[in-house]
Image (cartoon, rainbow, N blue to C red; front, side, top):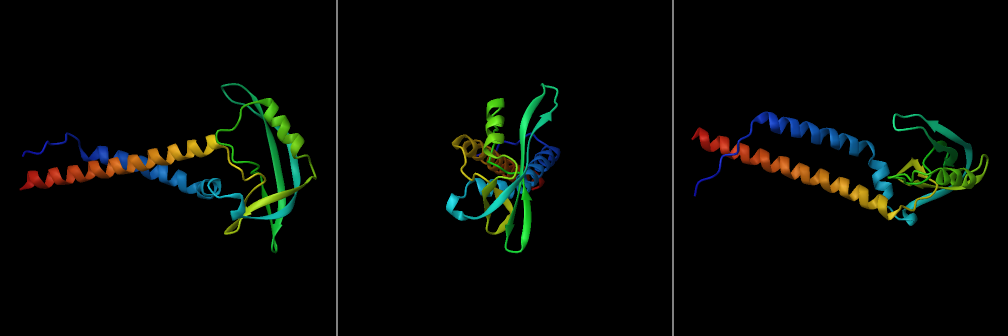
Length: 169
């Protein structure tokens, strides 16, 4: 049985590897966010905090200007005071003025709020830890694509190494 020679060069592997490495760096920078999305409400600690910023923020972009609710709050865990702007896990974020206005009405300035924080990393907090199903689906798909890409690059690398070893003999 003859093996089929894969027509590729090592540059393909290097390019794919760099892309995967950059993706891994992106995912690892959002590790707490991703981990937090899949935790249940019971996995969080909770304290009382205070809303210290509640305003509408204008975002200017090529696709058109939009207004987003800009909400920040302070909370204390043990002896440390923390500040966060995570209100909900919004990926993808609803794109409507009604949603943004509702957020401002729900979290006015100086309002006392319950802050849910990760016990292992109290600086990561959110006001509403419940995650939309669409958010979990999007993140699951992104992670699956990343893992499949990693497996594909590994398989391609393996095949190229085996092919080169056979051609040397």
